[in-house]
Length: 200
View 1 (tube, rainbow, N blue to C red):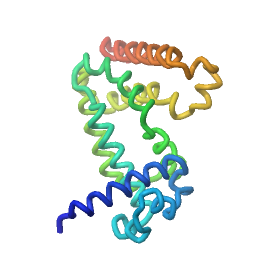
View 2 (cartoon, rainbow, N blue to C red):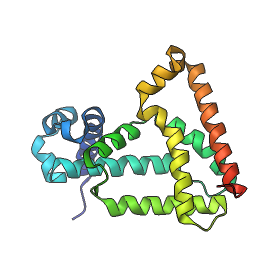
View 3 (cartoon, one colour):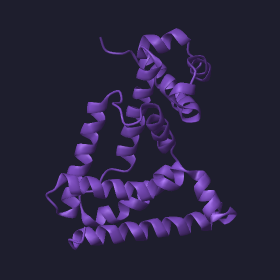
View 4 (tube, rainbow, N blue to C red):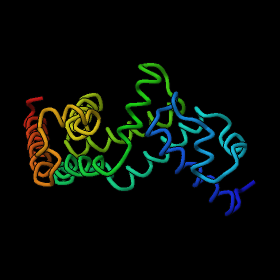
């Protein structure tokens, strides 16, 4: 049976509230009572829609990944790839995706995650597109490049305490952020150039 507009609205409220709760407290520390309070929805509706807290976390992760795919699509051209690192940096500056990923990593470690096949398919698609942009026919090599590019663009947000300690108070000014972004993009371009020249 198709979900009613009211049901869709309720689901959206729950996901929004759950995203904020999981971002702040992680999967282990999040509380269903607080999610219900944030959303203004009866706690029993959470279990009716999602079954349990772990499934709700998986639904939140699917939501944020879909949003990033829409806002920052993986490029398929060299020109698009050169813009990609800066776009990922900008996205993480205003998103809580890296916090959610950090919590997910702490909770599951290297073990399987819920909806693993869906996430795996997402990365297969990304590495295929990246292979096209780089002009290489090696998904494993493209995956390594993706890890490096995403890593340099997201690390300042995964460990904000390191960023603060290394860059000092000026790092949190707009000029400080602009300098960091410029540096991240420049290093991303160097990595891309090395790949295009066959050096990596």
